[in-house]
Length: 479
Ligand code: ADP
Image 1 (cartoon, rainbow, N blue to C red):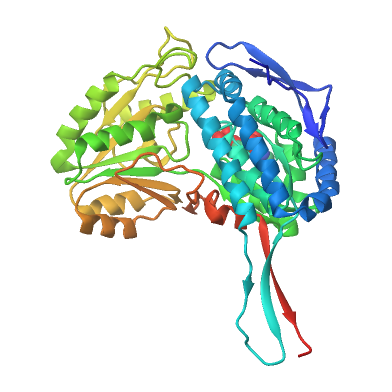
Image 2: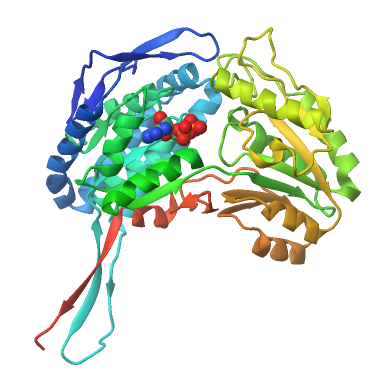
């Protein structure tokens, strides 16, 4: 199997070496995987200029030509799935099978937007007056930039790059310093399949601030897309205001997962496990607050505890593993702080609550807490770890009120069977995405994004293409 490990910046179709480097390590073993180019502001500017030069040629291709190149990129990711998955497991820690599923998921955005590229229509307005004709067209925004997080090292990039390229935009991406290798690997594949020089550029950076300033303030950039924490997102949004860039932000969540008394409890447990333990709980749509109606609390907790006892934690290269290490020591420290705070304030720990020292410093035990209350830190902060924190509620109205009691609104989940309740609760929950009796809700065809402080804009679906397009109105007179 070929190695796809690349360690330089990718600008204008070339691998650009940089003296300053930073180490990328394997979270399961501590092994250094590569020393990666640490781009500075000047190099980021060079990438923006390359994207600007590449724009006219790319924009002027027919949508069909762009679509065909995207499909070749999709095929290449599929053909190299195993190598990409192993690289991702090494730098990020998720099990190889789960990493392969992410490559499929990431590639599915490329295929989806290859299709959308060819079906992006404007409008011809019905005649509004005798002397004019009006139509509305879609145009690429122009040069774009993106900053992405480490939890989905492939898919968080493709869900931005694919619609940008499909729309006719060029782009500069700063991947996270913890997982730049997956980003650089797919840039190599893009180059091999003939995506023209300068259309996709990647600038890794250890200390993101300076490159981030260029990507949010450079006047040649017309659109900025970010996935990451709300705190950093707010700062970058301010920076984008300097020249009124078009923006998309996918920020933090605090997803409720509500189990009502009419739920199928076995299904609820199954879906919660899928939702909670994917990527060891390190996803922005992980169920964070598990709200269970009092009548079914004991029965649900018993079933859940039995299921959690079966979870297998190990290195991502082991067989049949459910989850691997957390990303770094900061992640472990945060999870431990939240668990300790909950216990100190009266929560009961039925399982776990500790690091699995026998596996290594970054492996955290499947943890089950009950008697959690809304005033504990664990109820208001994103846990980003394998911890199920259960609160109870008495009736539907209280369940909804508790679920909405957060400044965030990315994903939400609930389990119920009464169709009238499903309708009521679906309307009442304040979030951009809802899983109803379903814990897995991410697909290229879905509109991914949040409300409240969880973000602006949508990724995937036909709405994801519109984020990279401007709407231009043409009025033709002289009739
Ligand atoms: P996470 O908690 O998922 O790491 P962050 O918001 O810290 O979320 O990071 C998401 C992305 O934002 C990463 O690529 C990171 O390097 C980048 N980032 C963090 N701080 C800044 C900043 N001040 N300017 C630009 N990018 C930043």
